[in-house]
Image (cartoon, rainbow, N blue to C red; front, side, top):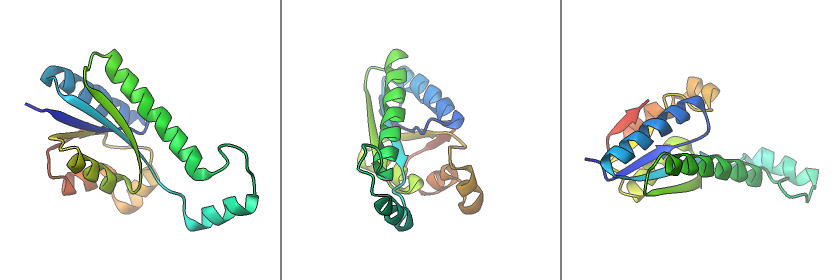
Length: 147
């Protein structure tokens, strides 16, 4: 049925539900489960403020902090899927605009299904710009299951 399932995971409740559903489907279909955690680069204003701060402590760079949090989320999701019995699991972190990055990842990895939560961590942005799930369903080349 499905051979490569992509599940975006950001640690939110919606992403948790999507991960559980994607894990069930991957086990049922013996599919490769691909997890992606997307984080945004900080703005130029934030970059200039972090340079002014002048701290050289590890993790003081906002991008490093966001990348580290994304890595933790991706590792957690991968561990969860493996513990649930999915044989083939890979996890990636990507920087960028979430909907575009998710669709690009699905294309790059030749996924035949995307499973994502109806709400992630960006509720304010969703209200102003439209939800990530809405954008993904409108632009993906493969079926999208919104949980």
